[in-house]
Image (cartoon, rainbow, N blue to C red; front, side):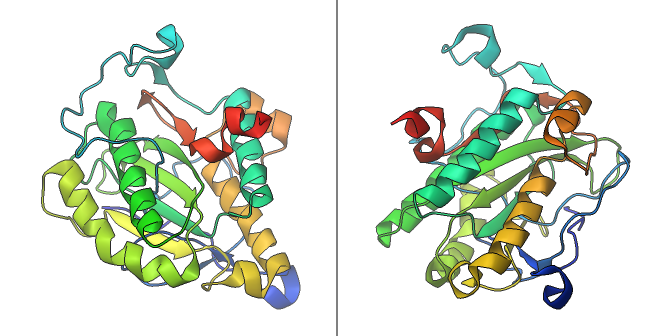
Length: 273
């Protein structure tokens, strides 16, 4: 199960906006507040879902065990372990977020998926997240929409029902296509895991508290957009947090394989073109 650890919505009268998270989930729309500085204690896990990938083309995840990718040497091995986001990773995610805005696909939704609760082993999370994002991207494409996204993996310490490996994803999903995604997402999880959907495995919220805020009130959306990104980056190393002035830190935990990623259209190569 995913435990709610979402920040409360911003008071728009005093702070300029409420944070809204987006994703294909049937839990309804819930606003989120700007995150306040916190000590690095064990955080509750978001009740959000994960998101869309642009490059996985298989029909299912299949074997979710860790294995070398065969690309990029040891740094990109699927069984490589890490315990926090590095400064280089955070720099890439921040640059990707800025590029998403530049190409007209700002993040509109925050999605979290509790992969451990869904039955996916820690070593299989990266492949599962990739498959989920691919299915979402294809669904949006069928309705004439592009997308952009970024994600991070965390593994909350402890043995409680709300602990374990999970994904936080920020994605661009047009407001009019949110119902399409929410209607399909549980089926995607069944295809990926080969198991029946379990309650609270995925959760999705609009960034800013309501659908379409990015066009109805861009300034308010921007405030909450920044808060959502800060939450996703909370598993930074102490060095990275100091370098970027991150105020909220929580243990990111042990991750096997990729710890974070972006869609190709906002990745490093796309940003150079």
